[in-house]
Image (cartoon, rainbow, N blue to C red; front, top):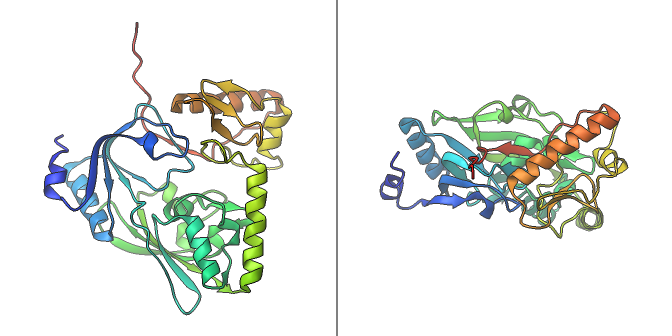
Length: 306
C-alpha cells in the first residue's frame, strides 16, 4: 500500500509515517504505526474513515492513550489520533458538549468555570472524552455514564448517528464501543447548577488524594486491572508481596500496587509480561482472576534469532 498518497490527496491533514506510538502513550512504550493521522475536524475524520474503507486499510482510533498499551510490533494501517479534535462548549441549560479528543480533566474544569456540578470525580482522570466513553471511566464513586445524555459517532461506513445513554450500554468499565466499530466524535454531558466554592473544594480534595496515593512521578497506564467482585486489586497484589517486583524496566509501583510504572526504559513487552505474571500469581494465591482494565492493542514484535 502506497500510504504516501495520503499526504498528496489530503494536504491539510497532519499525517506522519512510521511514527513510534511510544511518543503518544502514557507508558512511553509502543511500536511504530504505518501511518498516524491527526484530524482537526469532523470532516477530516470522515475523510480518513472513507479512504481507509475504500482502500480496505485497517483503521485504529486513539485518544490520549492514557489507559492503553501498544505492543512493540506496532500497528499496521492507519492510526487516527483524535487529540486535535478538542473543542468544548457549554449551553445555558447546564450541558457541556465536548469533542472526543478533549481531555476529561479539562472538561471537568470547564464545568467548574460554568458553576456546574457532576464531573468533580473526573478532575484527575487523564484520558480523552472518547476514551472515557469507551471505558465508562470513573473514580471516587463517579462514572461518566451518570452524566452523559448522548454520544455522536461516525460509523465505519461514514454515516453519522447519535446514541442515547441507554444505547451506549454502559456498565463497569464497559460500553457498547468495545464491541462496535463506531467512532466517538462528540459527547453531551448534562450537569446541574452548583456552588463554585464547593465544587472547587471537592476537586482539590480528590486531586490531593490522587497525588498522595498514585505514582504520578512515573509513566504508567493508570489502573491496570478491573476491581474483582469482593476484592481490591491493589491489596491483593500488595498482600502477595509483589510491590517493587520488576520485569525489564516495568515495576509494580511501591506507592500503589495497582499500577505498573516505567522506571527504566520499559518496553510494551515488559508491561504485558508483568500483567501475565501478576494474573498468574494472584490466581495461584487467591484463586481470583484479574481482568485487565487497560486496553492492549497492536502486534507482537518479530522474534529474531541470533
